[in-house]
Amino acid sequence: MDASTVGKTTVTVAVYASREQEPAILEALYEHGSELGFKPFYEKANNFDHERQREFCERVIESQESHLTAFAHNKEQDGNSNTQQIEAVHSAIHVDDLLSSDTNPLVIVDGNEQQATPFIRALSGLRTDSPMITHCLQSEYYYPTALLADLTANYLAHSIENNRYDYSNPVLQAPRAKDACGDKWGQAFSSMYQDSINYSPPELQRMRGESVRERIRCWYEGAVALDGGTERPMSDSLNPVVQALRREGFEELANVLAQL
Image (cartoon, rainbow, N blue to C red; front, side, top):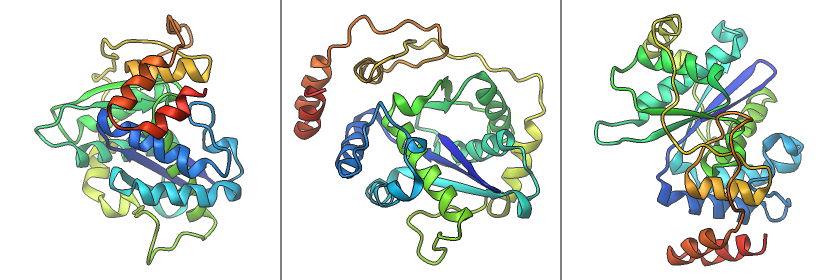
């Protein structure tokens, strides 16, 4: 999940995908971003002017719409201007809507403990069975799903704020959560003040990458960057990643990574 605030508009996006589906998302990011020169694991939404990347974002969103869900918030109409609280409640509703009893996912919150804690408390107001939750600093540099969320939230926030969002035929639906999900909004918002609920990250592999190749290895190994002191990968060789992608039929993506 990731969020973007432009002016009075905040948009929070969740991307729901399996590990097996991540290479296809990454392949789409490389394919549609080629004309722009967009490089996953190196760049994010704010690295480019919105107008310059607008068409790229639209193509990516259209190709990955089945994985995407979004909520918007208008600070004037919806009455709350605390973006951290808005993002936490949006994210809690996203997770509650997306999860079913037969799924056991890992929820990645972009940021640090200060982003994860209010989200966990908000989610506790909607469900008692909490999924595994972790945070990851600058997750859009590590996970294709997080990068897709970052690009989508940025595109939608700019479009809505600048009156370029087509409500009759949008690239992606982005209802105002406080209006569309009033009951859940209230329950999640109230639960953010439950000091008895604390966040402790799960025992996952922890690594950080200082280069594109290192961050690709972190993604491949399913590691998260919990803080700046986390160890770097032992190797930045992409051969294991390239070979795994070839076995799964992602020949073009494998060729791209082999050239890095």
